Amino acid sequence: MEIKLEDKEKLLSEIAREINTCEKCALAKTRIKAVPGSGNLAAKLMFIGEAPGRNEDEQGLPFVGQAGKVLDKALAANGLSREACFIANVAKCRPPNNRVPTPEEVACCISYLTLQIKILEPKCIVLLGATALKYFIKEEKPSISALRGKKIMIEGRIFVPTYHPAACLRTYKYYEVIVRDLAFAKSLI
Image: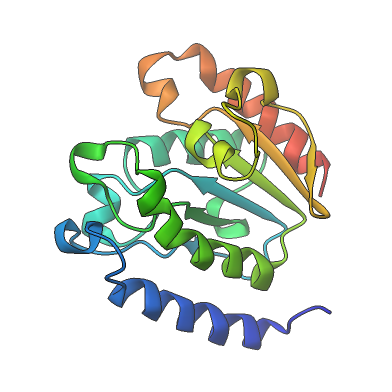
């Protein structure tokens, strides 16, 4: 059953309020702003990253720092914009020093993300990086290198893993790979 756009807006606003006042883990004590996610509520393409960084923590929006600029560039290379997509993270608050969120921290947030996916009903979900990948692919140590750019079906949903845009800040060769993976994801919608 498809959810009407106005109902999606109401439900996602409710989830965002819960995220913004959440105190389920210690990250609530160190965050400036929680980052519920943002974007087009009718998006066919959803992106899921790891956790907010410093810029995201300050602005309360996902992928607004350097990695966000890389993502925007990769989207534009495929004739897409962030306004056409919905972007979220597995962890909704910034871990101190931009460390990887712990499994316990993600466990506190994953129900929010699961609800967002259910409400948005995207045709394809792009998993940005190993942290996002491991919360959807139930393997001991799923390899982003081995799984990136592939269509993976999970509970009737299409997932396409790729490198996290921040990887391009260290190794530029990943940018072209991300662009190709996004082209593949776009072809699936």
